[in-house]
Image (cartoon, rainbow, N blue to C red; front, side, top):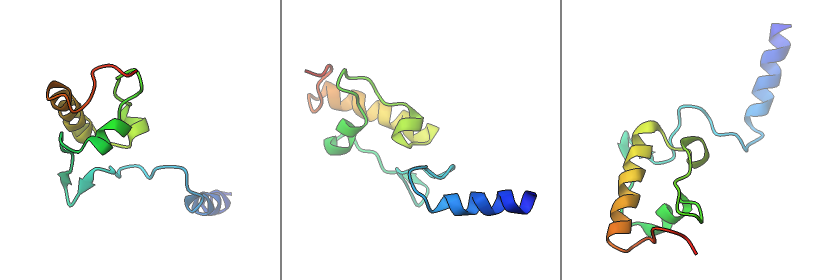
Length: 86
């Protein structure tokens, strides 16, 4: 039975749609690549109401999520991002 379950899990890996655990999309070579001046990325991480997306939804680790939070706050203070959406 265990072999069959393992085979099914291996088949599901290539299906896509699920993020592999332990992989942060912002980490490059162990360094978090989040910058407050890059508004194209920051806009995708904020809801239309102005709230940050969760770690699960944004695909960031805890360290990068904190960096994203600081970057969004800095971008808002410099008027690169709005505090509230439309």
